[in-house]
Image 1 (cartoon, rainbow, N blue to C red):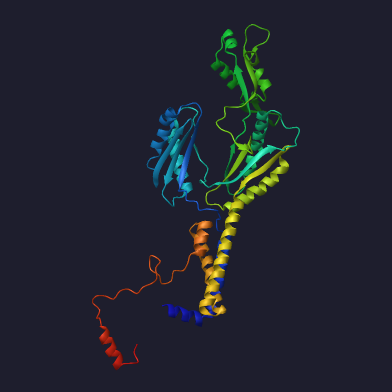
Image 2 (cartoon, rainbow, N blue to C red):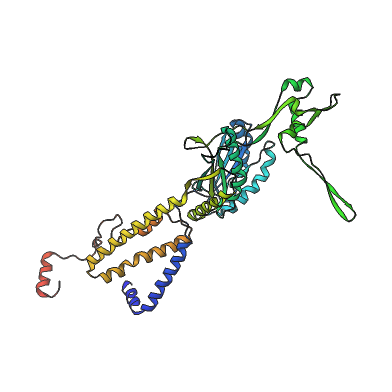
Length: 447
């Protein structure tokens, strides 16, 4: 069979050269579309359901939220395993699907099941699906901070972190979420800016109000109401009631109760209204100080090297749009790690190819024949890249290294030892040494 292939290749040289050129073109096209990463991503197909529960204990979260969601998720197509986690403030249910399942189909089925369980959950609890990413999806980390020599930065560290968190949430994060290949941008550290109303129980009791009644008054006065449309003189005028407060002073001036005075009793007379933050469950540090940290998550199946480059370019564009004194500093860029991996693979492949060529020249004694045989290395590499793109295998230190540096075993045994011919069958005729000598005497030309 091999002789026929060699004979065909020698007789059809033009066809073989054209096939090699076509293979090079297809391999180069596949190499430009091969997902590149530092290490292989072995995360299975999974969908996570996260539920934020700030006011319940872990036992109640497990009983009232996690367990009902688990029961409702049972029986989904190609579902293999259900895992859950219940801790203070969070309920997480992980659904593991069979390998090869379409992630978007799995999320669609999960979302349909979630709609059926919403009525069984406590009021105000809303489960959400986690972003379409994996455990290796964090491709870019950065910090938002003030310049060291910026004199107008807030002196209070809490106020400084609060301002930086606003910049992250309303400037940086929305811009990075528009980058192709980014599925989510997470924020760690900082303080959420809130208008905090701290009531005085003694003053509320003196006027016959409770904290619940105070909360109802605040809720009714912090929303706009829409009306209808009035047509007059060929024009349409939209009718609406503007009741949404804009700042802490407007909240403090909200009327609570009319007690026979010239003016109504206001919120500011029974409570303290000011700028504050919600209770934090964690923080982020950089260079030994608290910071606002952002993380860009890559969409499942994207090229991490290209996506991280896009994020880095977008951050460079955002520098000019930030408030005075605020800068974005890159902490981790997946591109640097991938580039180092590619350099390692290139170095190993180059050294391996040189070693193969030197050994072939020593064995064959002809440098032209050695180069022809060595051409099989890049051609086989391009052919392997085509298959990797076809079946969704990413290029990384392990896959590229295995493809490019795997030694040719030749005629070796299964366990790597030297090839030995199979033993003669017991039914085959055998000859003694004397018989062999006699046969050689009668036929000296035979070996």
